[in-house]
Image (cartoon, rainbow, N blue to C red; front, side):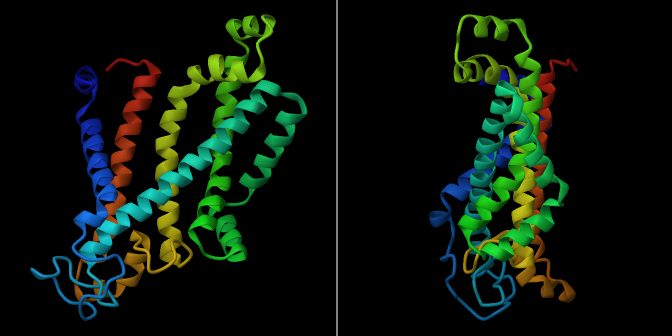
Length: 272
């Protein structure tokens, strides 16, 4: 770990530190938040004070507590969604590259159809048909985002499938699953890990955008995108409270990109 830290640029170290802070806040949110997630503690739009460090929102809920709870909800849902998208996209992409033929053709054409429609429009249509809810939100975004993972996994896996050691494994009589897990997956793990960070950023921003539009996490769950929408009126009075959840979104996105840039540079084998 010490050797790894010595090779990391300052931007990557900063990114890891910020991500660690967000993770700690998300995990220990019940202990760190002064008040409950949906607890009404005062009048609406109370100013910053010692009692309410970031004031209150439209319903009189403590903004600092909502901001802390939002780290658990927004980041947690984005992480679960990204993991599900990668599970769907990477498995189908690897199978398409390994099996080829009609399996590859059918999965590729299905992905092309899904990617032909703008993702945000298709997400809005799907959520409008299925209705709001955390489960529907996770499934819809994961399925649509898995198409990007599929294309990366398929392209990188097909480059490995033509290698001599894969052909040797096939001649030995190894099964498809053994070849995928032992020969292909270890050799494409670096770009997939980097893509996981990028996908997390896109999913995180998508969930925040949907919450801003009213189709994200259902109330009274604290969500940074919804917090910006609910308190946007304060901007006209010179109050920067709505910018706090927006800044939380921006800082995490930039930090993840710092780490992803370092991972891509490290995986490429390029020297400074």
